[in-house]
Image (tube, rainbow, N blue to C red; front, side, top):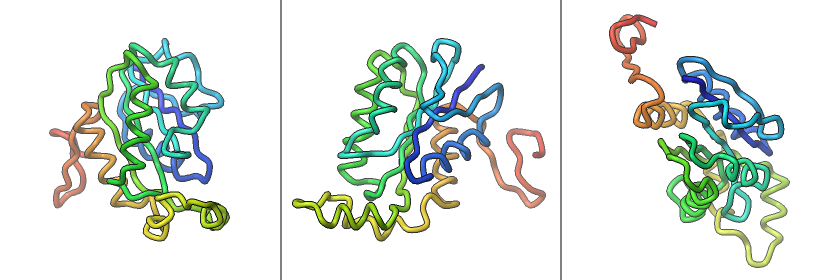
Length: 177
């Protein structure tokens, strides 16, 4: 199975998730920023990562998702809003809508640390965006706990075998890693 991990990252958070996702995927795979993304037709599964702007995927990702109809997709996002926030749900639903006709294997989203300059600019808006109240709790994200949640989401989506920790290390199925 040939897999593609494509991402858009403004502050580096979505790139961190993309790199971790890529590391966890078995089989043949490629990792590229959305600005260099190849034609999706050459891949069996495409993992598309994005950041949210105004409760939607960034514009470059929106354009790429429109090319991914009839593909198997795993969507992932980073955002300043809380993981279970309305903004995060709206953004992921918009991504699903843009990929009309695609089979969504799974989704993952988590907070990503927001640069101070972005927080300051948002604080000066009227009205202030809802995610601004959540921004302080995004400090240090994505982190190891987020990556464990990502691993669970990938397993649930059928993109990797479940990895279990044992006294002797990690195993997947019967093979020591």
